[in-house]
Length: 499
Image (cartoon, rainbow, N blue to C red):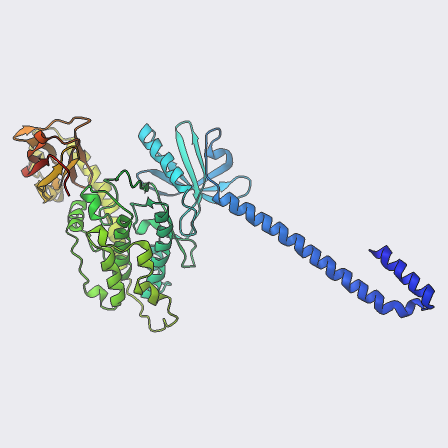
């Protein structure tokens, strides 16, 4: 290009007798044009590189995670301090040995075939959950007896812990903003026909320590729904679980919406709508589904209360979907720019709620130790039933005969279907529970009769592939050292479909 320009200049001088100095303006114009073209070319190259890198990064983030079986997590990551633990195992902070990227590692403790299958299922489901409001799975390892899932690191801590911080302003508008984000993440899950089934405050975390953006975490209980195969589960946290879960009825996408309603109730008032003195009482309160707005809601808008009421409907068919919840007038009002009159909400009850949650975790551990101590005593020992000098009087006071918090209900079911008889029992020491039919003990049969128990006092009798001869009266009998309790219900098997 420069040689062509010089040739043009020489020709102009020869044919027009022009001195080279008179061509200076032409030189300057050429120089400026060349510089501009070079800058433009550099910008194009830079834009292309940035776009390529961004595309590769997005591709990496959205790629399906395949479980690595030829190497261990420690081959690629340094395992640092423990961040938390639960029934599944423990979560540690990780640092990538090459890039230094900070991640979280979920180490599954279950070594049985069932636990390992559940871990693989969670990893598989997370390949469907690429959304800004959902924590992302980055890698997974299965080596020897260990399964580890590498997750996006979310450094902000639990949302409710952030709210009670003295430097954080808690308002109804902020609460609506949090609920909007929860619904956005949940909406994406529901669009994939995936239910979370364990939404609770501990599973809503802040992305950093200063902002207000949140993510949903922990998909260990999540399931993908199949319209042709109804799903019934017995899992979740008592205060946040929906009535259909307790009743062992098929779950749906709106099962999550009940939990959203409970979270919103606590977020605005600091109180849990269905919290009892025990897990069994909480489950009983959920099945009653009696919702009240006490003095804690005096400063809360009617739109917010209607939002909560529309979610905490006992009949799941009447609950709002994610789409309808995002269109609710409370959500619409949140987008209004006029938020100057919003009143700051009290954090006192929220602090008490968090303290109770921590106390419950500690109390369950102490209760487990107490039961281990009681079970180690010799049968027939007088010290078991009567306090001796120095004995823990509170231990004796807490003991009581079994009580049915929720009784069995009469049922009618079609031939060939499955019947489920459920009750909730409290008692200490833990009662021994047996099922009877016509006064005779009912034995389990893998393909017909199954007995199930949850640690929160929920007992269930499942009778599959019903026949007419299964009709009759069924009794649940609970017994401990302080007495016994009985509860009965009648099962009627119909020869034909029920509508």
